[in-house]
Image (cartoon, rainbow, N blue to C red; front, side):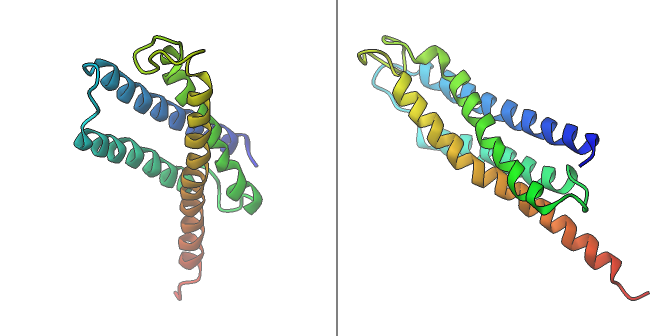
Length: 156
């Protein structure tokens, strides 16, 4: 594992974190701006999910194809990318940090605030992001290896 690969991997994780934080901030801002009793429109939620989810999955596929060399060990390629779930969890918690206290716009008057429920939600979101984004990263890396291997075995 070279230093360049490690740096590229960390940069991939940082960009995934930034995308996740941006996505959370967009939806929180929109939800907080709604009048009391209103819900986010379905078309907004679908557009939000496609836009942000697509960007994060696309970045994972691209990261898988670019971050590690073809000679990187399989155990690294198949396990390290799952760490992105932690980055998504932290982004979720930071994005909602102003909405965890009792009386906040999204928490309401829950006794003791919403720390536990937001934390549980963050664990679910981060846990779901790990196999989706990490798995997509591994698919990108695997496709790269497959394509490069086929290119070497072409008859000349």
